[in-house]
Image (cartoon, rainbow, N blue to C red):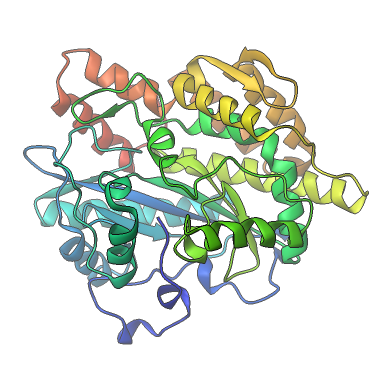
Length: 404
Protein backbone atom coordinates (compact mmCIF):
# COMPACT_ATOMS: atom_id res chain seq x y z
CA UNK A 1 0.00 0.00 0.00
CA UNK A 2 1.24 3.52 0.65
CA UNK A 3 3.13 5.16 3.47
CA UNK A 4 1.70 8.19 5.22
CA UNK A 5 2.86 11.68 4.40
CA UNK A 6 4.53 11.87 7.83
CA UNK A 7 6.50 8.69 7.12
CA UNK A 8 8.02 10.24 4.01
CA UNK A 9 8.49 13.83 5.10
CA UNK A 10 12.11 13.50 6.13
CA UNK A 11 11.58 13.03 9.89
CA UNK A 12 14.97 12.11 11.42
CA UNK A 13 15.24 8.32 12.01
CA UNK A 14 15.96 8.78 15.72
CA UNK A 15 12.54 10.39 16.24
CA UNK A 16 10.55 7.62 14.53
CA UNK A 17 9.16 4.56 16.31
CA UNK A 18 11.81 1.83 16.04
CA UNK A 19 9.32 -0.73 14.79
CA UNK A 20 8.78 1.44 11.69
CA UNK A 21 12.29 2.47 10.60
CA UNK A 22 12.33 4.35 7.33
CA UNK A 23 14.81 3.24 4.66
CA UNK A 24 17.51 5.49 3.30
CA UNK A 25 15.73 5.54 0.02
CA UNK A 26 14.51 7.12 -3.13
CA UNK A 27 12.33 9.37 -0.95
CA UNK A 28 15.42 11.42 -0.06
CA UNK A 29 15.87 12.48 -3.70
CA UNK A 30 16.72 16.19 -3.69
CA UNK A 31 14.23 18.38 -5.52
CA UNK A 32 15.03 18.59 -9.21
CA UNK A 33 17.61 15.78 -9.24
CA UNK A 34 16.16 13.85 -12.16
CA UNK A 35 19.41 12.54 -13.60
CA UNK A 36 22.94 11.41 -12.81
CA UNK A 37 25.45 12.26 -15.51
CA UNK A 38 22.62 12.75 -17.99
CA UNK A 39 21.02 9.37 -17.17
CA UNK A 40 17.60 9.41 -15.50
CA UNK A 41 17.76 8.34 -11.88
CA UNK A 42 15.90 5.23 -10.81
CA UNK A 43 14.85 3.58 -7.55
CA UNK A 44 12.84 0.56 -6.47
CA UNK A 45 10.49 -0.13 -3.58
CA UNK A 46 9.80 -3.78 -2.72
CA UNK A 47 7.06 -5.18 -0.48
CA UNK A 48 7.65 -8.59 1.08
CA UNK A 49 5.69 -11.21 3.02
CA UNK A 50 6.66 -12.74 6.35
CA UNK A 51 5.79 -16.43 6.78
CA UNK A 52 5.95 -18.61 9.86
CA UNK A 53 9.06 -20.77 9.69
CA UNK A 54 7.12 -23.96 10.40
CA UNK A 55 3.55 -23.61 9.14
CA UNK A 56 4.25 -21.31 6.19
CA UNK A 57 1.26 -19.17 7.08
CA UNK A 58 1.66 -15.39 7.28
CA UNK A 59 3.45 -14.35 10.47
CA UNK A 60 2.70 -11.07 12.23
CA UNK A 61 6.38 -10.55 12.97
CA UNK A 62 7.01 -7.27 11.14
CA UNK A 63 7.89 -5.20 14.25
CA UNK A 64 10.61 -7.59 15.46
CA UNK A 65 11.98 -8.23 11.97
CA UNK A 66 12.14 -4.50 11.22
CA UNK A 67 13.98 -3.88 14.48
CA UNK A 68 16.49 -6.66 13.71
CA UNK A 69 17.05 -5.33 10.18
CA UNK A 70 17.60 -1.84 11.57
CA UNK A 71 20.24 -3.16 13.97
CA UNK A 72 21.97 -4.77 10.97
CA UNK A 73 22.10 -1.42 9.21
CA UNK A 74 19.30 -1.85 6.66
CA UNK A 75 16.34 0.46 6.97
CA UNK A 76 12.93 -0.99 6.22
CA UNK A 77 9.43 0.08 7.12
CA UNK A 78 6.05 -1.31 8.06
CA UNK A 79 3.29 -1.87 5.55
CA UNK A 80 -0.50 -2.17 5.79
CA UNK A 81 -0.38 -5.44 7.75
CA UNK A 82 2.06 -6.90 10.29
CA UNK A 83 2.68 -9.70 7.76
CA UNK A 84 4.59 -7.33 5.48
CA UNK A 85 7.74 -5.23 5.33
CA UNK A 86 8.98 -2.80 2.69
CA UNK A 87 12.43 -1.69 1.56
CA UNK A 88 13.59 0.96 -0.88
CA UNK A 89 16.84 1.51 -2.71
CA UNK A 90 18.79 4.75 -2.68
CA UNK A 91 18.68 6.92 -5.78
CA UNK A 92 20.59 4.90 -8.38
CA UNK A 93 22.10 5.54 -11.79
CA UNK A 94 23.14 2.05 -12.87
CA UNK A 95 21.89 -1.52 -12.88
CA UNK A 96 24.84 -2.51 -10.70
CA UNK A 97 23.87 0.00 -8.02
CA UNK A 98 20.29 -1.25 -8.03
CA UNK A 99 21.29 -4.91 -7.81
CA UNK A 100 23.79 -4.27 -5.04
CA UNK A 101 21.25 -2.40 -2.92
CA UNK A 102 18.46 -4.91 -3.48
CA UNK A 103 20.71 -7.90 -2.80
CA UNK A 104 22.02 -6.47 0.45
CA UNK A 105 18.55 -5.52 1.72
CA UNK A 106 17.19 -8.97 0.89
CA UNK A 107 20.10 -10.75 2.59
CA UNK A 108 19.74 -8.70 5.77
CA UNK A 109 15.96 -9.15 5.86
CA UNK A 110 16.28 -12.91 5.34
CA UNK A 111 18.69 -13.17 8.28
CA UNK A 112 16.52 -10.91 10.44
CA UNK A 113 13.42 -12.97 9.73
CA UNK A 114 15.22 -16.25 10.40
CA UNK A 115 16.31 -14.91 13.77
CA UNK A 116 12.65 -14.32 14.64
CA UNK A 117 11.49 -17.78 13.53
CA UNK A 118 10.08 -16.47 10.26
CA UNK A 119 11.08 -16.37 6.64
CA UNK A 120 10.69 -13.47 4.27
CA UNK A 121 9.56 -14.18 0.70
CA UNK A 122 8.81 -12.26 -2.47
CA UNK A 123 5.37 -13.32 -3.69
CA UNK A 124 2.45 -11.16 -4.71
CA UNK A 125 0.17 -13.12 -2.36
CA UNK A 126 0.71 -15.51 0.54
CA UNK A 127 0.16 -19.07 -0.71
CA UNK A 128 -1.53 -20.06 2.55
CA UNK A 129 -4.13 -17.89 4.23
CA UNK A 130 -3.78 -16.57 7.76
CA UNK A 131 -7.49 -16.01 8.20
CA UNK A 132 -9.78 -13.12 7.38
CA UNK A 133 -9.96 -10.31 8.26
CA UNK A 134 -6.27 -9.59 8.01
CA UNK A 135 -5.08 -7.47 10.94
CA UNK A 136 -3.99 -3.97 9.98
CA UNK A 137 -0.84 -2.29 11.22
CA UNK A 138 -1.85 -0.15 14.24
CA UNK A 139 -1.26 3.20 12.57
CA UNK A 140 -4.03 5.78 12.40
CA UNK A 141 -4.16 5.85 8.60
CA UNK A 142 -4.53 2.11 8.19
CA UNK A 143 -7.17 2.01 10.89
CA UNK A 144 -9.14 4.73 9.09
CA UNK A 145 -8.90 2.72 5.89
CA UNK A 146 -10.35 -0.27 7.69
CA UNK A 147 -13.21 1.79 9.07
CA UNK A 148 -14.11 3.34 5.71
CA UNK A 149 -13.64 0.41 3.35
CA UNK A 150 -14.65 -2.48 5.58
CA UNK A 151 -14.36 -5.88 3.94
CA UNK A 152 -12.59 -4.40 0.92
CA UNK A 153 -9.38 -4.41 2.99
CA UNK A 154 -10.00 -7.74 4.73
CA UNK A 155 -7.40 -9.63 2.70
CA UNK A 156 -5.07 -7.08 1.14
CA UNK A 157 -1.70 -8.30 2.41
CA UNK A 158 -0.49 -8.25 -1.20
CA UNK A 159 3.00 -7.27 -2.31
CA UNK A 160 4.10 -5.21 -5.28
CA UNK A 161 7.23 -3.64 -6.72
CA UNK A 162 7.23 0.09 -7.44
CA UNK A 163 9.75 1.68 -9.81
CA UNK A 164 10.55 5.41 -9.59
CA UNK A 165 12.26 7.25 -12.45
CA UNK A 166 13.51 10.82 -12.07
CA UNK A 167 11.55 13.43 -14.01
CA UNK A 168 12.27 17.04 -14.94
CA UNK A 169 8.87 18.17 -13.60
CA UNK A 170 5.38 16.92 -12.71
CA UNK A 171 3.84 17.96 -16.02
CA UNK A 172 6.16 15.71 -17.97
CA UNK A 173 5.77 12.95 -15.40
CA UNK A 174 2.04 12.91 -16.19
CA UNK A 175 2.67 12.91 -19.94
CA UNK A 176 5.13 10.03 -19.53
CA UNK A 177 2.34 8.14 -17.73
CA UNK A 178 0.19 8.55 -20.85
CA UNK A 179 2.96 7.09 -23.01
CA UNK A 180 3.50 4.14 -20.63
CA UNK A 181 -0.21 3.25 -20.55
CA UNK A 182 -0.18 0.85 -23.57
CA UNK A 183 2.68 -1.16 -22.06
CA UNK A 184 1.19 -1.77 -18.62
CA UNK A 185 -0.32 -5.20 -19.51
CA UNK A 186 3.04 -6.40 -20.86
CA UNK A 187 4.84 -5.21 -17.73
CA UNK A 188 2.26 -6.95 -15.53
CA UNK A 189 2.60 -10.20 -17.49
CA UNK A 190 6.37 -10.01 -17.19
CA UNK A 191 6.16 -9.67 -13.39
CA UNK A 192 3.29 -12.09 -12.64
CA UNK A 193 4.31 -13.83 -9.40
CA UNK A 194 1.21 -14.80 -7.41
CA UNK A 195 -0.31 -18.04 -8.66
CA UNK A 196 -1.46 -19.30 -5.23
CA UNK A 197 -3.56 -17.79 -2.46
CA UNK A 198 -5.74 -19.13 0.33
CA UNK A 199 -4.21 -22.59 0.08
CA UNK A 200 -5.17 -23.20 -3.55
CA UNK A 201 -4.18 -22.35 -7.12
CA UNK A 202 -5.92 -19.14 -8.16
CA UNK A 203 -6.13 -19.89 -11.89
CA UNK A 204 -4.31 -16.60 -12.43
CA UNK A 205 -0.63 -15.78 -12.77
CA UNK A 206 -1.06 -12.54 -10.80
CA UNK A 207 -3.75 -12.89 -8.18
CA UNK A 208 -2.34 -9.76 -6.54
CA UNK A 209 -3.41 -7.71 -9.56
CA UNK A 210 -6.93 -9.16 -9.45
CA UNK A 211 -7.24 -8.63 -5.68
CA UNK A 212 -5.94 -5.08 -5.90
CA UNK A 213 -8.71 -3.98 -8.25
CA UNK A 214 -11.35 -4.42 -5.56
CA UNK A 215 -10.23 -1.09 -4.09
CA UNK A 216 -12.36 1.71 -5.56
CA UNK A 217 -9.37 3.95 -6.31
CA UNK A 218 -7.46 1.19 -8.17
CA UNK A 219 -9.04 2.19 -11.48
CA UNK A 220 -7.71 1.35 -14.96
CA UNK A 221 -4.96 3.85 -15.76
CA UNK A 222 -6.64 6.96 -17.23
CA UNK A 223 -5.25 9.00 -20.12
CA UNK A 224 -4.56 12.35 -18.44
CA UNK A 225 -3.34 14.61 -21.26
CA UNK A 226 -1.84 17.14 -18.84
CA UNK A 227 -1.04 17.77 -15.20
CA UNK A 228 -4.42 19.50 -14.93
CA UNK A 229 -6.08 16.32 -16.23
CA UNK A 230 -4.27 14.26 -13.61
CA UNK A 231 -5.33 16.65 -10.89
CA UNK A 232 -8.97 16.51 -12.03
CA UNK A 233 -8.95 12.70 -11.95
CA UNK A 234 -7.31 12.75 -8.51
CA UNK A 235 -9.85 15.22 -7.17
CA UNK A 236 -12.72 13.02 -8.37
CA UNK A 237 -11.34 10.05 -6.44
CA UNK A 238 -10.89 12.14 -3.31
CA UNK A 239 -14.30 13.87 -3.47
CA UNK A 240 -16.09 10.57 -4.07
CA UNK A 241 -14.40 8.98 -1.08
CA UNK A 242 -12.88 6.26 -3.26
CA UNK A 243 -9.48 7.52 -2.05
CA UNK A 244 -8.91 8.38 1.59
CA UNK A 245 -6.02 10.71 0.79
CA UNK A 246 -3.42 11.34 -1.91
CA UNK A 247 -1.58 8.17 -0.91
CA UNK A 248 -4.59 6.17 -2.05
CA UNK A 249 -4.53 7.49 -5.60
CA UNK A 250 -3.78 3.99 -6.84
CA UNK A 251 -3.11 4.79 -10.48
CA UNK A 252 -0.71 2.27 -12.02
CA UNK A 253 1.51 5.18 -13.10
CA UNK A 254 1.53 8.51 -11.31
CA UNK A 255 3.77 11.44 -10.46
CA UNK A 256 5.10 11.09 -6.94
CA UNK A 257 3.56 13.51 -4.45
CA UNK A 258 6.86 13.97 -2.62
CA UNK A 259 9.79 13.50 -4.96
CA UNK A 260 10.45 14.43 -8.63
CA UNK A 261 9.72 11.02 -10.10
CA UNK A 262 7.14 9.10 -12.07
CA UNK A 263 6.15 5.98 -10.14
CA UNK A 264 5.12 2.75 -11.91
CA UNK A 265 3.14 0.46 -9.60
CA UNK A 266 1.92 -2.29 -11.94
CA UNK A 267 4.35 -5.03 -10.92
CA UNK A 268 4.00 -8.02 -8.63
CA UNK A 269 6.96 -8.07 -6.27
CA UNK A 270 9.85 -9.74 -8.09
CA UNK A 271 10.83 -13.26 -7.05
CA UNK A 272 14.51 -12.35 -7.44
CA UNK A 273 16.43 -9.11 -7.18
CA UNK A 274 17.60 -9.50 -10.78
CA UNK A 275 14.01 -9.43 -12.05
CA UNK A 276 13.34 -6.22 -10.14
CA UNK A 277 16.38 -4.68 -11.83
CA UNK A 278 15.00 -5.71 -15.23
CA UNK A 279 11.66 -4.02 -14.47
CA UNK A 280 13.45 -0.81 -13.49
CA UNK A 281 15.65 -0.76 -16.59
CA UNK A 282 12.66 -1.26 -18.88
CA UNK A 283 10.61 1.46 -17.19
CA UNK A 284 13.50 3.92 -17.32
CA UNK A 285 14.09 3.16 -21.00
CA UNK A 286 10.40 3.58 -21.85
CA UNK A 287 10.44 6.89 -19.95
CA UNK A 288 13.45 8.09 -21.97
CA UNK A 289 11.65 7.27 -25.23
CA UNK A 290 8.47 8.93 -23.95
CA UNK A 291 10.30 12.13 -23.03
CA UNK A 292 11.71 12.31 -26.55
CA UNK A 293 8.20 11.93 -27.97
CA UNK A 294 6.89 14.60 -25.61
CA UNK A 295 9.65 17.01 -26.64
CA UNK A 296 8.66 16.33 -30.27
CA UNK A 297 5.03 17.18 -29.51
CA UNK A 298 3.72 13.60 -29.73
CA UNK A 299 1.01 12.69 -27.19
CA UNK A 300 0.59 9.27 -25.66
CA UNK A 301 -1.83 7.00 -27.61
CA UNK A 302 -5.48 7.07 -26.55
CA UNK A 303 -7.76 4.06 -26.31
CA UNK A 304 -10.77 3.21 -24.11
CA UNK A 305 -10.32 2.48 -20.42
CA UNK A 306 -12.36 -0.70 -20.75
CA UNK A 307 -9.92 -2.05 -23.35
CA UNK A 308 -7.04 -1.48 -20.94
CA UNK A 309 -9.02 -3.18 -18.19
CA UNK A 310 -9.51 -6.27 -20.38
CA UNK A 311 -5.82 -6.29 -21.34
CA UNK A 312 -4.77 -6.07 -17.70
CA UNK A 313 -7.08 -8.91 -16.73
CA UNK A 314 -5.67 -11.07 -19.51
CA UNK A 315 -2.14 -10.27 -18.34
CA UNK A 316 -3.06 -11.16 -14.76
CA UNK A 317 -4.67 -14.40 -15.91
CA UNK A 318 -2.07 -15.64 -18.41
CA UNK A 319 1.14 -14.04 -17.23
CA UNK A 320 4.19 -14.47 -19.41
CA UNK A 321 3.27 -17.96 -20.55
CA UNK A 322 -0.01 -17.13 -22.30
CA UNK A 323 -1.56 -14.50 -24.53
CA UNK A 324 -1.61 -10.73 -24.35
CA UNK A 325 -4.19 -8.22 -25.55
CA UNK A 326 -2.66 -5.14 -27.15
CA UNK A 327 -4.93 -2.38 -25.78
CA UNK A 328 -4.03 -0.06 -28.63
CA UNK A 329 -5.18 -2.41 -31.39
CA UNK A 330 -7.45 -4.87 -29.56
CA UNK A 331 -5.51 -7.81 -31.04
CA UNK A 332 -4.20 -10.92 -29.27
CA UNK A 333 -0.61 -12.08 -29.49
CA UNK A 334 1.65 -14.08 -27.25
CA UNK A 335 2.72 -12.35 -24.07
CA UNK A 336 6.36 -12.97 -24.98
CA UNK A 337 5.75 -11.43 -28.38
CA UNK A 338 4.28 -8.34 -26.75
CA UNK A 339 7.28 -8.09 -24.40
CA UNK A 340 9.57 -8.27 -27.43
CA UNK A 341 7.61 -5.36 -28.92
CA UNK A 342 8.19 -3.50 -25.65
CA UNK A 343 11.92 -4.19 -25.92
CA UNK A 344 11.95 -2.72 -29.43
CA UNK A 345 10.08 0.34 -28.21
CA UNK A 346 12.58 0.73 -25.34
CA UNK A 347 15.72 0.05 -27.39
CA UNK A 348 16.97 3.62 -27.73
CA UNK A 349 16.27 4.31 -24.06
CA UNK A 350 18.20 1.19 -23.03
CA UNK A 351 21.08 2.28 -25.24
CA UNK A 352 21.09 5.76 -23.71
CA UNK A 353 21.40 4.32 -20.21
CA UNK A 354 24.02 1.74 -21.18
CA UNK A 355 21.55 -0.97 -20.25
CA UNK A 356 20.83 -2.77 -23.52
CA UNK A 357 23.13 -5.77 -22.96
CA UNK A 358 22.08 -6.15 -19.32
CA UNK A 359 18.37 -5.97 -20.13
CA UNK A 360 18.71 -8.47 -23.00
CA UNK A 361 20.60 -10.88 -20.74
CA UNK A 362 18.09 -10.60 -17.91
CA UNK A 363 15.10 -10.95 -20.23
CA UNK A 364 16.65 -13.97 -21.92
CA UNK A 365 17.16 -15.62 -18.56
CA UNK A 366 13.61 -14.77 -17.49
CA UNK A 367 12.23 -16.28 -20.69
CA UNK A 368 14.30 -19.42 -20.03
CA UNK A 369 13.21 -19.69 -16.38
CA UNK A 370 9.59 -18.68 -16.90
CA UNK A 371 7.65 -16.10 -14.93
CA UNK A 372 7.58 -16.10 -11.16
CA UNK A 373 4.09 -17.61 -11.37
CA UNK A 374 5.36 -20.41 -13.63
CA UNK A 375 8.14 -21.18 -11.18
CA UNK A 376 5.69 -21.18 -8.27
CA UNK A 377 3.51 -23.72 -10.08
CA UNK A 378 6.51 -25.89 -10.94
CA UNK A 379 7.74 -25.92 -7.33
CA UNK A 380 4.32 -26.84 -5.97
CA UNK A 381 3.46 -29.25 -8.78
CA UNK A 382 6.18 -31.82 -8.17
CA UNK A 383 4.58 -33.16 -4.97
CA UNK A 384 1.63 -30.79 -4.54
CA UNK A 385 3.10 -29.61 -1.23
CA UNK A 386 3.13 -26.03 -0.05
CA UNK A 387 6.33 -26.50 1.92
CA UNK A 388 8.08 -27.13 -1.42
CA UNK A 389 6.66 -23.84 -2.71
CA UNK A 390 7.75 -22.01 0.44
CA UNK A 391 11.26 -23.46 0.15
CA UNK A 392 11.40 -22.30 -3.47
CA UNK A 393 10.32 -18.78 -2.51
CA UNK A 394 12.95 -18.65 0.25
CA UNK A 395 15.73 -19.74 -2.10
CA UNK A 396 14.65 -17.29 -4.79
CA UNK A 397 14.54 -14.38 -2.34
CA UNK A 398 18.31 -14.11 -2.16
CA UNK A 399 19.22 -16.33 -5.13
CA UNK A 400 19.82 -15.78 -8.83
CA UNK A 401 17.24 -15.87 -11.61
CA UNK A 402 17.14 -19.46 -12.84
CA UNK A 403 14.67 -22.27 -13.60
CA UNK A 404 13.10 -24.01 -10.60
